[in-house]
Image 1: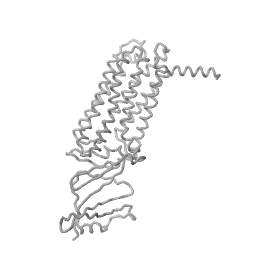
Image 2: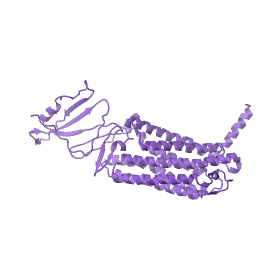
Image 3: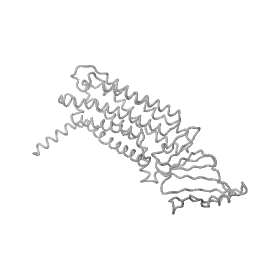
Length: 411
């Protein structure tokens, strides 16, 4: 190809990739890439640590697939001239631009609502209190019904459907501004409900203030999606009333892309702590939990552990709640025993394995903190029992367990 022909082809390509749509292209290439990496991280570590995927994971994957489609449709539209006035485009390009504009609205609603359903399903999996699950079920029902209604409304926005992308076809259409505003208001309201739903439950947990604020911060990431939804709402009147949907809807479309991709990113960001804690353990200190009474429990949680937090008969699975926080799990049990009991406890028993034979080591050490309190004829000691093995054991330790029972005396 002659140099002049190559330059002419390049000039034509640059003209189609017009500056007015350049910011849309940047958003649609950058943000989905970040969202996809975070979804892959979430699914990979769930499979590695928990060995299974929940419905919340499946729905976030479906949301990402719809999000990829949502970001691809405008790129095709930009290739055919989206961002330019329709009058400057050929009829074929104009129809293709409007087809992509119609398709991106459908994909947007699928991706955003599936992401919201994924978050609600996550709530339902990790919070086990009955009242909270009822609230989540109601929210899930509302979001799902709204999702179906708005999807069908978008598909049948114009009758016949061909009029959505070819205005020369006779027919009728709904008010685009009214449709978009109703959708934006409903989206913002459900975003706010989803954001505040777990806060009362977290507030009632018996956790140190620092850890409690950390959990609230994790679940409050959705505030970014709420903010972007409100920002997008302010751009709707201009885009909805624009007579030229190619050049007049760029700002609205851009903020819709930002909102949807940010929602997926926020839904997956907490799970990023697991790989980061492995790479930079000093940046992510362990979370410690203390129980009352004579039983104390210090824990740094992983997804492989199965423990429960008990508070006023309302329990929460801490391994699911802090699935994204990484770390290791250690259990410290303090009991009081007499010297004779200690001798009995330390004596080898039939069936016990040592590190040489069975791969497990059981060690008992005594700090001998003399309280000068006589109980059963012996001085009380503080004994720390540690069990270690090649792999983290799977344990279920209620944090409000009754006091540990000393071993029976030897007759």
